[in-house]
Amino acid sequence: GDQESGKAKLLSVRTAYYLFLTAWFEMGTSFALPAMGALSDRIKDRFDITDTGIGTLTSAYYFSAMVGPLVGGIFMDKLGPGWVVIGANVIVSLGAMCQAIANGPNQFGLLLFGRLLLGFGGEITPFTTVEILGRLFPDYFGLMA
Image (cartoon, rainbow, N blue to C red; front, side, top):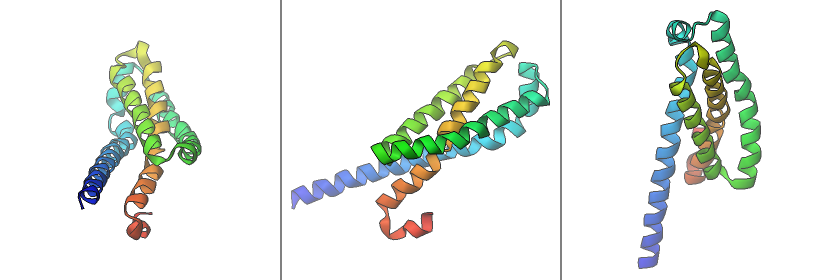
């Protein structure tokens, strides 16, 4: 009776939490890729860089995006997807803050570091999201993959 009702309520709160968390940060990481192209003129002016600098920032994202899923997969096997998606999103948030704080030619390194963090954490999020959703909705896993 009451105990089962409490379990169902807790499960629904946990489900809503995971859905919100994964959707929110998935949206943020999706913005990270096109932002560099759309903002390249502003970035070049603000940081006094050329197209080479834009290429470096773009490459930093993709380089760390190759490493992130490997490390994330190892941690997901050990800790589970919930903790990994939270950790990845903390990394993404730190990367976004580094990029937001960076302002001017003498802070290009901070901008670069932010892109590295964003690529690393941002590419962990998609596969942990699929794993979480697959656990929450096992009957529909084939539609999510």
